[in-house]
Image (cartoon, rainbow, N blue to C red; front, side, top):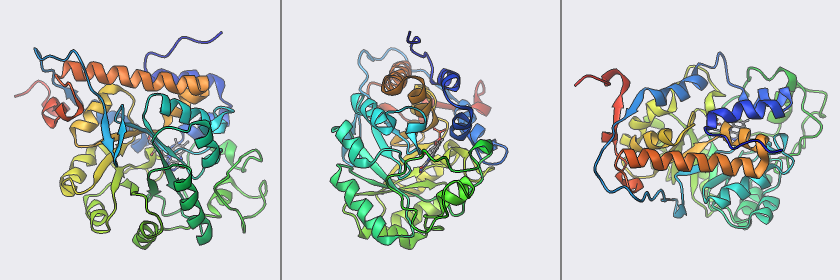
Length: 363
Ligand code: FNR
């Protein structure tokens, strides 16, 4: 018997927890340090309230946006996350089908369990971007860029917030790389044998670390696709991204999984947006759990949001159908939030619709 659809994305974690092996649940949920940043990402949204606007004709809400030239029906992109087959046997194929069904974007991780070709066979339509983890093997990097383009990806996402191997809390049970991991985009030429080293040592063995601005330029030079930098928090780095000719940035702290104690992404978003001044597209991720959260991020200048963990919970809960339901919940909630704030289209969403917590109730 299938369970009733979730009312809120927050419920999905509990539903997924019942289905997932403990080590997988802990890996997905994991954060760096004490989890201050992971929690703060969510709490930052609650520090803003929505100001309703009444007596406007909001009988229709148009939630479509154009990102990097592609139209999305919702300002939502599924964040790159590793190993969807740990959540469901259909892995990224199921996620991609759900994303295509609702016409939201999807970033396929370099750490995906299904190859980019298998994913595009399973879901031939859909706005899909490829997350490139730069590997020590330069030929492999070039080949991956070519494969992504051939498989229909329309942008490359470089994650720039992993200068060193991280240590995730709550991943104790994953101390050894599981034998059943399938990583069709990665090459482990000189890596130690699986099962003999820690999980961290194993997966980081093939990565080029740290990467620098030269690698950003290298990527721009070696693909005709637009390049998105994911993991920018400071206005200065955003300015540098503009100077280097990057096409878009995603304000992200990796869901609090890299350095604990960095600010919530929503809190640094306005500074980044201000310095960029429309010269490239700005997205954000971390802690987006409701349609109202999406509206708040857009009000502070993001063009769209990426959603990470809730998609994994939905996938674990009910595969493709679960992810569809989760996206549908976001869609419904965003429409309600737009209607109450007097917005008929995404461009109606402005900073004026937000009240900062410290100011709520005072004038
Ligand atoms: C991630 N994230 C991530 N980011 C990335 O650039 N490449 C990757 O392969 C992964 N893998 C990954 C695995 C898991 C299990 C999680 C939870 C996260 C980070 C991800 O793209 C995104 O930045 C955060 O998940 C966003 O925060 P929320 O929505 O999970 O709060």
